[in-house]
Amino acid sequence: MKVLVIGAAGMVGRKLTAALLAAGQVGGQPIESLMLADIVAPETPAASLPIDTIATDLSEPGSAASLLQARPDLIFHLAAIVSGEAEADFEKGYRINLDGTRHLFEAIRLSAQLYRPRVVFTSSIAVFGEPLPAVIGDSQDHTPLTSYGTQKAICELLLADYSRRGFLDGVGIRLPTIAVRPGKPNKAASGFFSGIIREPLAGMEAILPVDDSVRHWFASPRAAVGFLLHAAQMDTAPLGQRRNLTMPGLSVTVAEQIAALRRVAGPAATQLIRRQPDEVIAKIVAGWPQAFDAQRASALGFRAETSFDEIIRIHIEDELPPVQP
Image (cartoon, rainbow, N blue to C red; front, top):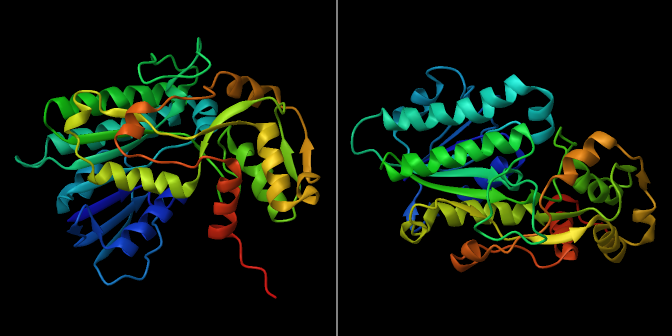
């Protein structure tokens, strides 16, 4: 099996790459080669199988067709600019998030006959917007209130239509907000959800721009990689024409996040959180869904964490160096 990861330089892309190399196979099929692509060339990991790393902009003409020359059997499409940046730069958001995705799907359609790869596309819960029920089921309408959410919603429709026409075998997974994200903060409006855990665990101050009562939907980076791998090898027949799935996750408030941090790391960590209201971020977050009943995905075998304490402990296990005796 030949595997292509687009967006491989990002946090989830790097973790997915590591998981693929550790497993050496997908769905029982050995991985013959791995191609890693992003706007900047991903680092080349040590491996016993052939790995190509490519710097490319999927929104540029010809980029997608070049990536498909090796005819990958499995394509993970993770590339996107995040919510805050897509809202701040309208043209860039549509160019990267929408045009890049359509170029990829079109390049697959126009490639040689009898080529129908599995495409796993990362969408977002930002496709949903007001009016929202307290708990969102699988039949909720798409009413996004951000440009990012709109771009993802359009791509979901494209994925379903290109799959219906037989050009590709698509699975769209609507990721919860991924926490705790390692590394430096990005431009996502949701970044503070990770920051108020990540920075205190590292002994640093964190800014909280919203009220403690804000509720949101979470899963860990480890769960996100699990979603992707499961989508890559699942039987897509039960999806029918509904090719996009809301992933399971955990609904907690900011106050519950902080309480979990206190239980795991002690009160000194929570004292590093500084409340600094930001009306722009608060307005964006207020339009986001808060809880889901992800029955379809759960029935199909997707799994996530069941407590925020678990999410914090996963971050400590995966990202923080062990304490020396």
